[in-house]
Image 1 (cartoon, rainbow, N blue to C red):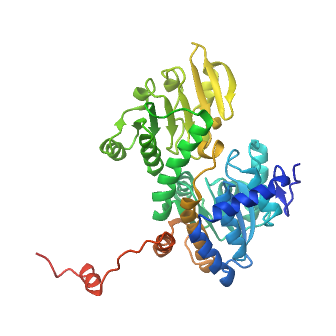
Image 2: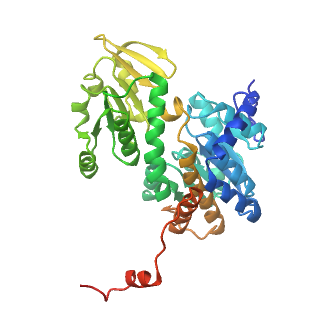
Image 3: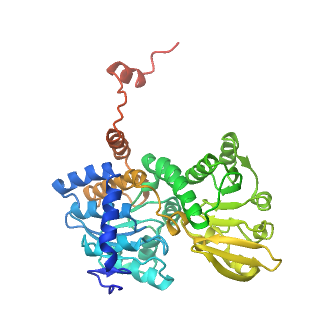
Length: 425
């Protein structure tokens, strides 16, 4: 049963899935102690009272816990998916039926539905936008000028979105301040590295059931996501090859013990290819032409543009679904190449995304940043800026406390020493 898309109820696949979704949301919440503490504070202080928030995020159990926290802090929420394949339909149903949060998201939705859902959140005339990939703010700036005046701030979750937003700021088209959640240390050092590393391999294994040990896994890009994928792949016995355009990152990958080479050199020897660059056509026709029979290609960057799927389609004599989330392309010379999850985020297309314990920190940053935006309404410059350092450190302290870890504190003598210059040799 499909619900009807309205501003009040949202649009989800099947409201009958709500009970299952609620149980899964509660399970994830057990591993999100920092967000739980923030929610407790929000219930008392109501820092978001009277504010309308439009959120374009992956509709997962972890996101649900963030939405509930913001709701309990006084905000009116409207949520849509930030990727057509990342929605967990039971979670979307639960948000509507169990938690009263309008949610517009159906796994596998087409392009038209995706943008209809996105605009449904903007129809609520939001004060704050929350993005994962900057599609929401792009729609605001390019088409939805009717809502621009009412928006006083926004947040962006991911590397790709921050890149887009900084381009907007540089070109002087950005209309309101954006907090780059991705730039917080307690986000990218953990979410990107450990979350993407584990969940990407989880998605690959669920989709293919391949044994990674002994295979050549090619990781395109050695940012924090690439570092995580490479680390986890090597931990499972794979031979990791890294491709890069940044010489410093390439050198770092080499020093970390990985083979480093150009994609043209890696193409004939790779068994599995994972793109995590945030760029376009990192794997292109010239690479497909060199790949071995049976090579598997997937993406864990935000958009599916990292793989030139149109070129692969033109090269293929036929294509079919080999198994769920695995599409087989038979090349005219007889080779078979496999694309996972339509080239979209494999960790969310074929798996469940990042573990809740790491999203706890990322979404704690989101919640505290919305509180920061609310407190400083009208006072912040129109630019993309990092999560304030004190909030970032607060998230780290709360996470350590939740894990039962105590650390040292500087003594007054040590503080004086670090702030002085007189003492030396």
